[in-house]
Length: 128
Ligand code: HEM
Image (cartoon, rainbow, N blue to C red):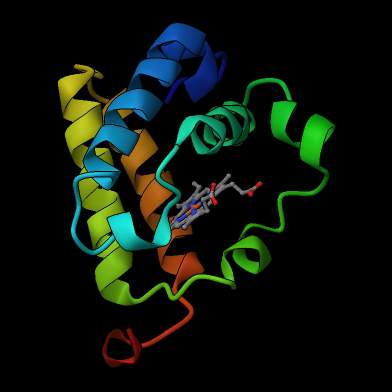
């Protein structure tokens, strides 16, 4: 990425929201993810949009409302296997493609999200 603009500046709030919407559309269809998410994803989407805004360099919307993200701790109530991290990332890859996020933005986003998704893993595959 160039030095002047971060991912959020290049993406903008509307496209970020579009990615989040597309992403949760896939999550709610995924047999391995659907069971651990609420049926109504309205609040989940709202929080994720706030989080990704700050994660990609925008204003700290998530922290302002919810405090320090402590993302790994907040995911501890859920069984997150390597397979579920892969599933999460495949939903995100589809969302980034469908939202037509161009390179090198797309890869920059996906790489950062991949790193964080791996960090969320808290069970081995056979523990689910
Ligand atoms: C919340 C699953 C990775 C960000 C949640 C929730 C689940 C979940 C079940 C609770 C939803 C709700 O009750 O509303 C997973 C799984 C992942 C994963 C299976 C696979 C690795 C990630 C990653 C990020 C992320 C990579 C950020 C880049 C969030 C945020 C919340 C959340 C911000 C809301 C936390 C809150 O309650 O304030 N996730 N997640 N998750 N997740 Fe993930």
